Length: 352
Image (cartoon, one colour):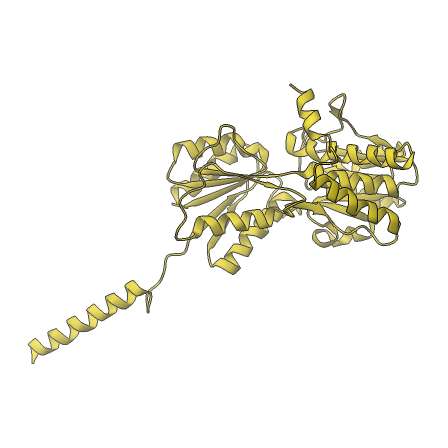
């Protein structure tokens, strides 16, 4: 009797092991992706928040486990990356140009872990890193054209958080769009806050202080600007506050549609330059979590108007004419076709 009972128990245990191996009644280890933010924080209503949205999309649609670590200062970058490394995360996504050096160091030290970085690419490429970059000069060009069409004072403005390429690329495109409008319409709209030829502009020196955003916006409006595009993360929300308080002016959002991410300012948002980091992050996680994934092989993704990686949000109702809207559609097509120069390549060459 005892022998038969032993046989039955053994069979039950064997069946249980088989079912577990096949996924029946057992638990499957979830793919894990970790995100390290820049100093703007997870709820910056800008590039960190938009990137995290892509992580949440992956959690919902792909069933992966996601987590973020916030960086309060630049010394947190390496610490946060290392924390994910030590926890065995197979994919670590870092957000922002300023994390470039620390991401590179971690990737080279940990070749068996995959990394992706928003707003950065490496030359030469690093085999286990996928760069996620965005041609925001193209979308910024469209925003500049809209600003020039919308201004009543003949003066529009832009300023940045820190003078790094992922910020200045917006500003160069914006200025070029204004100049293109002037060329097409015989106007003389001025751009305050940035001059590509002189490589000179207004910068807050950070991406966190809404007080700086208010101060700079007030100064630009006092100079006559009635459309302002801040490329400065949460600093730009201070600009929106100042524009709303003063009235008679517009703000152009960046990274995400500010009528959605910052609805308290929707009445003063002219349009927004969209950088669809959420989709790029989602696609990266989807690729890395696939069973047949064989590594990034140093590839770089570039979001453009052509692949909907960048764009602009709908323009505030009634501000520009139907004719200007048609011109925008044609300009977009011409940029995609390479018929319009956004000014970014020439700007980069001027720095050499």
